[in-house]
Image 1 (cartoon, rainbow, N blue to C red):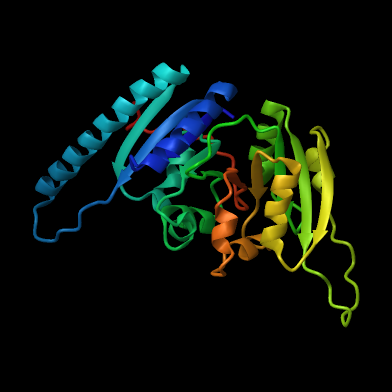
Image 2: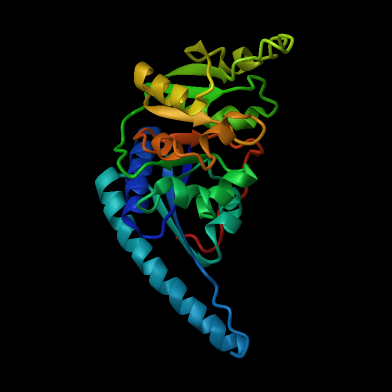
Length: 287
């Protein structure tokens, strides 16, 4: 893990996520890229040169804020920090930033009184998750940094098609000599249906050089089972895969237990199903 991208809107929760990322970067001897995206003004009757001047002024002001944060983070953690401020949106441009900066992981915080709603209902984080191309660590507002010693990897489909997807959890486990607990969860099978064949798995191939174990749970209350497992195993981090790995819909629907799922203080590592290896040079707006 060499580069961690941290989008920020200068909020308290973004600051908390930044300090978590900085601690992680210090342990990994990685650099942090502070990234601020501001909306491009949509005005049709203003000359292009005037509009560009206005955008440049906004970029300069946001960049100044980032540099102040950079000075504090550099002094506190002794890490390399790069600043990027540009017009656009995190949801649309984060993947490009990851590619240009050769990013290994993005770290974002939760926002609002009800973090679950803000993350999942139209926010930048939700859009990033839906694309499934950026490995993302979501840091709850109350989560302080703690070196992960046990990572709970909750999944229902144990066959991983894209090895790049598992790179963040493998790197995290290797960096901290952490143990991965693979929690295989599924709904109970109906007695009226024939028993399903065991699901094929290639996790042993991917985790063979990492300390790991397997636990199994069959329950209608999948979310509650995962949260119970986090508590019982003293996990410091949850790792999950969205999309066809069907645990995700159980966690993020509109039921009244959603807030319970998102009140955990344990960071959530989202393994990007469509992950690619980034190797492009840094962008020219970096400092």
